[in-house]
View 1 (cartoon, rainbow, N blue to C red):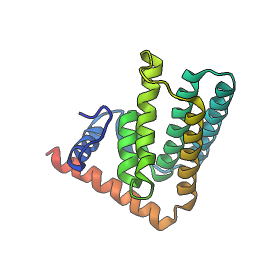
View 2: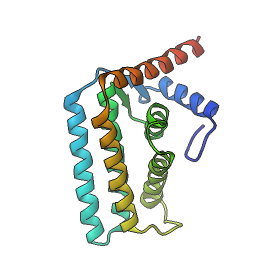
View 3: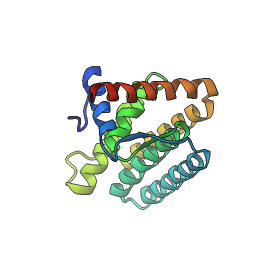
Length: 177
């Protein structure tokens, strides 16, 4: 099972198939421009909260709101494509699967790491210090890059990504037999 870190393509595929088998895992739904805009707004609000916490020196909440700014912009992409995923590690794995070739690998790694950092700061004492300014810079860069991707998606590219998603779902159906 995947709990963070790097997986082989085979392990990644198996994990995504597992995600399709879970009730709160990956689901194909109707695309929604209204939800896309709502999640973009949630990402902006999380960025604002991150900045307020950074100015006040509250590192734990810079890390947490930074992660959610990233998560919400990725979710804006998902609802634009017609995807629902309530398991965060499934969301990250699917993000990498769908658009990993369109974005720098470091961006996906940053998203995965920020989830781990959020968990670490919320539930355990941090073993490594994170600079809130660095977190804020990385978060803004991530959100901007995913927004650019969202804004550049053509109908053809959306159809390609949806096909990739449907192929994955079909593969899950074949393996479930």
